[in-house]
Length: 377
Ligand SMILES: Cc1ncc(COP(=O)(O)O)c(C=O)c1O
Image (cartoon, rainbow, N blue to C red):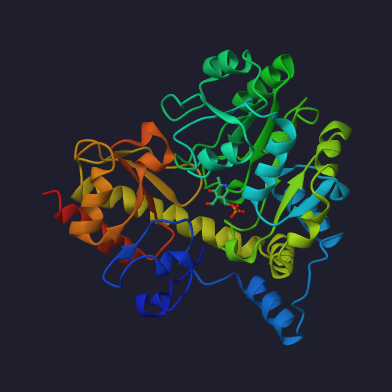
């Protein structure tokens, strides 16, 4: 399969998004989860057509978004989604906070599994709940630890499926156990599945709602924003599969629908309905970059260890032999002029780690690792 090209660095530097505006020009930016590939042609065409017809008003996601997501989920994952059970939201973050607000009374706890996507540490207190950490063990869910946590009756479990930053694709058996525990202890599972489309060759994504018994206790939050690099357009989806979970979404603030990005809906629909072939090329390209990164680290930075991710374009690098806390990140930024995410943002378990975004060209990846390696030898 033909791999996706990446525009030259000068062109990338003209982008005005966070990745390209957060550092001076001598820094290679590999932190925030934006990709350097050009947009999928069906997505850019849909956006261009919308602009050409001055179609930039408020969004009207029903029924297009639900139909599109249901079609994609059925084809790709064998997951039967009821289009009427899809609710448009402005982004995954807002959806999770609204769900937690409804589930948690002030002071209730919400379980998360660090190292985990940094904003989880902000979303839980934003919903006036307390964080209950059940750290991953060897990069996997600690099912015994989750049972102990669920026995304390948290308001919810915020699951990252697949898991950012370690790239673990939780398997069906693990998720079945999560669902069993959720049912036994009466805990609602909010499953952030934004990285679902980015499961790489060799792994299989299990949407939480395909697990028997999950419908009554779990909600899935989806978006095309990571898979097709359209996070700035502001659209995601909440999916339910039971009357109980649908009742929760029905209690979202009435203005929720007006907050969704209209161009985001258009782009999500284009991605889900016409973006499959491009997504396959993306996955082949990320598969290639993951292997390249592995080879570069082996050859040039043997001090760094990692478990290649099964999903996402994010590499969780254990640099603890180079320093603890966020020392490795500071060193790479100051001496190598390479920006990566500091590990401590993902929880205490991130000490000595960095997260590197490999959704870029082979040239940029090689230059970054060569520059990083030069600071440690
Ligand atoms: C696990 C996870 N959830 C949510 C988001 C952000 O989604 P949104 O911009 O729709 O809030 C990201 C972005 O990288 C992510 O990795």
